[in-house]
Image 1 (tube, rainbow, N blue to C red):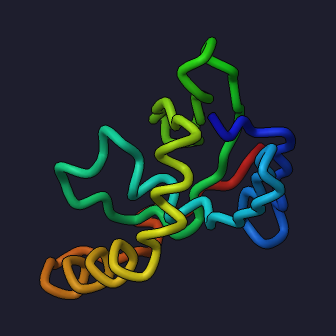
Image 2: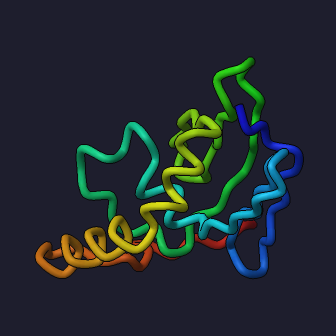
Length: 115
C-alpha cells in the first residue's frame, strides 16, 4: 500500500498537495476533489469553484475524511487519490461537459462574507 506521508493545503491556490511513500506527489484542486468525491459521482455537483477544505481527519486504514465548507464530507482512500490523478483529464473534461449541458455553473450561487 502506498501510504500518504504528507498533506499540505495551499489556500492561495485552492489546492491540496499529497505526497506518498513512493515519493509520488499529486496536487488536486479543491473543486476537483469536491466534485469528484467518491459519494458525489452520481450527481452533478455545481457552484463549487470557491469551495474550501476546512478539515482533514484520518479514518483508520481507510483513508482521510475531507470536510468541505459546504457541510459535505467524504472519505478518500489512497487508492482513490491515485485514481483521481490518473483519470484527471477525462474526469475533469466530463465534469466541464456536463456543466455546459446543464443550466448550472461552477461559480458560487451566493457570495458569503465572514463577519
